[in-house]
Image 1 (spheres, rainbow over the protein chains, first blue to last red):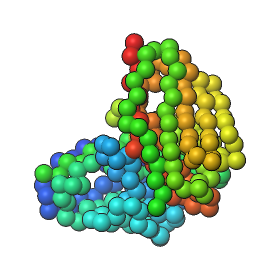
Image 2: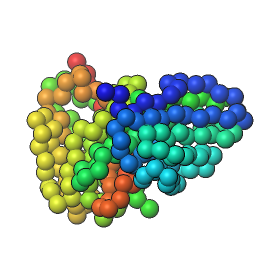
Image 3: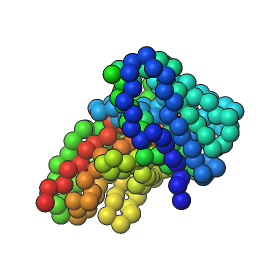
Amino acid sequence: IAGITQAPTSQILAAGRRMTLRCTQDMRHNAMYWYRQDLGLGLRLIHYSNTAGTTGKGEVPDGYSVSRANTDDFPLTLASAVPSQTSVYFCANATGGSVGELFFGEGSRLTVL
Amino acid sequence: GEDVEQSLFLSVREGDSSVINCTYTDSSSTYLYWYKQEPGAGLQLLTYIFSNMDMKQDQRLTVLLNKKDKHLSLRIADTQTGDSAIYFCAERGSGTYKYIFGTGTRLKVLA
């Protein structure tokens, strides 16, 4: 059972380059999220999608864009990467129901030089 | 806005109890969670508590919620080296799937 698959696992990128982090789920959950994790700052929400065809901005959306063309895929794009976007990026989805458990991918470590 | 705070580090000896604390500001928080992150991995749900509960126990884990003080704690009894990880507190309001995470507490268990 894959759950959530993220790619790439790790990437070094020159500043100014465009980069897309891929996220695919096989769980058919409606809600999906992108977080970045930075030491001392915890997880911060970048963008989210409640269902296919809709997206919304989180806490730190600047410099990032997302799309949700179907239920399974939720790519995150950095149009022109900057060093402050060096981070570990996690894609997650959420079950429905009262508990609303989040399931996370393994993360994508991005370094922008 | 909403905020969730945790201390960054905790060190305990193997066999002792660990207590990880969390404070939050959103009084409308309905669901409170503890997630565990092992090195190089994503987060996994450890346990959760609804806001109408004061305490929840699950094997070695005890969650205490003080709604008046907006304080949540996670107690791990008989802490083992395998418990070494980062523990995140998170909260969510009713009717929303917007989760707010704390900074995470890195637990180090000394043999």
